Image (cartoon, rainbow, N blue to C red; front, side, top):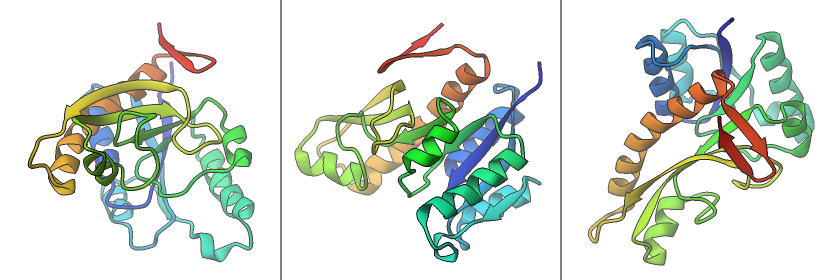
Length: 202
């Protein structure tokens, strides 16, 4: 069976992209990162991808007259590189129904909270401000909403009394780096079955 080709969309430093690549290199994930796309020209993820010999492309929203044109350009590149699974790794844009429908059931995202708690931006800040005792991370399939897609995996991380946004973020990020490659591996092994809001691991 041929390797699953991943297309990673990211807006920042790309630490989850690096964790995925590390899992591939270690033989823990039978996949290939075929393409990395960022919507920011100065994103470190582009440098990290290029250093690994991965095609790295910047597609900026400002260069398109509409959101659909912008997303169509991304979709065109993903198709050109034969991407099987779109992996959002800190991609700071909400994808439209148009894009989600193009890759229905094949877009995965990671969010730094236990969804449905604290969706959207500043999840760590939200959790601390709310007085929550537990946060964590969630990997889910992407639907048309904001962090509302069917949940694949979750892992809890305790919020300590003296936690700051930075310390909580650091501990959750370490969990993200372990969990995301695991979820992608299940997809590659065709072990994820979406039934309504439920994702069953078979």
